[in-house]
Amino acid sequence: MLMKVDSSRGFLFDPRGTVESADTPIAPRVAALEGLRLGILDNSKWNANKLLRGSAAALERGTRFGAVNYYVKHSFSKDAAPELIARIAAENEIVLTAIGDCGSCCSCCVRDSIALERLGIPAACIITTEFERETQLTRTALGMTGLVPVVIAHPVSSITMEEVAQRVAQIEVQARAVWLGCVPGEENA
Image: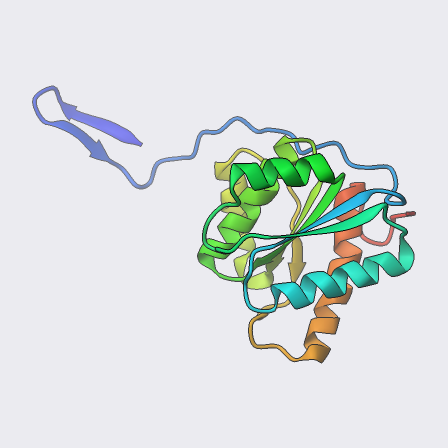
């Protein structure tokens, strides 16, 4: 928040200020997953590919998607390029993106999901337990508090294949719930 000191001295920044942002609703949720095109956005973090490919395979065991399309952004600490977001939105009805397991990659993963949601694409953004608070702050600052992340156990970068499989099981249940807009365990697709 900026506060005027007096007319001759300028302004002072008060870091205790509040975030003022109009809340934007999330994209409409889908009624069922069968036949939809699933976009997978890999932010190139260590193990993101393993988590995403494992999750896609697990999801495909219970759902016949129209297509599964893979995309990679080559910097986890930058938002996806607007052209890439537009392409993903044009080619898919739902999206799974990962991984937010540190500061910049988490906020960028959330920002990518919000960009897709604003284009009408339900996005399941995978983050770890250690970054739930940062995710909440990012969603609030960007005006999309309704975005529900997929939250998996931390850490991700140094896990075994058995631990990857455990996290994939968490992702499968939560991603379906995010896309369908229901509580985990209530989805029927």
